[in-house]
Image 1 (cartoon, rainbow, N blue to C red):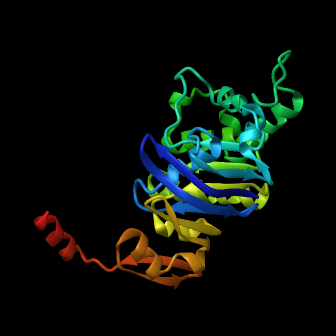
Image 2 (image 1 turned 120 degrees about the vertical axis):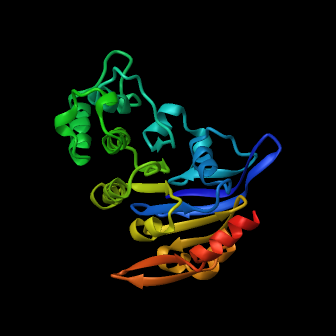
Image 3 (image 1 turned 90 degrees about the vertical axis):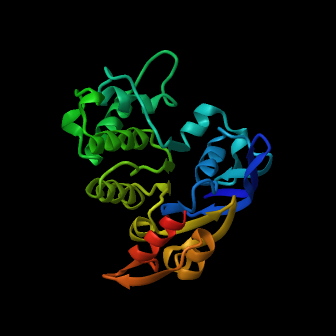
Length: 266
């Protein structure tokens, strides 16, 4: 269980998280959704300790995160930020090997167990035969799968992903999120992912946390959280939420004509 308890965090005097309390259930995929600037990415950074909270506590399995050192934290939580970069000369295999640093000893590098884990991670994302390729030669979808392989090779129980499908076309958005969802089913990972698309959140998530102005508006299973009332409160947008082929669909009320009118007034 990962839990934030009354967490407040700020950039200088600007409060971004305001007494946020939320529990993330184990072995489930939770989507963080809300308008830009509502605190989604900040919550992930607070969990990682990159942005110290001014009050509250982050607990992992009942243990205060602040008591964990960096290597110990890396064995518990893996983090994929919005933008990930590596040197052009680095190969896919070298990138994935970086995931094991928290397990390496001062006297040596990866163990045989580590190497098996690295290979398994590449197999999981469908890139086992590409380990020798330079990262700069991979397509956008392949690079994103490569970063997910590195996160998976870290072998942490909790995985945080900040907009993992940003800048990808629809095909890769679905394939990446299908892969991410599979981590909870096949590997029993607890996955928390920032998403902007409510239809993607409804299709792939088990749970949803809806944030607005640094506060939690709603939290829980998809079907009890994504509804018209919550969407209007969080996004200031009226919409229909209905079921089709076993999943929820989000459809805004605004027509193209009304959007054109709003644009002309602006």
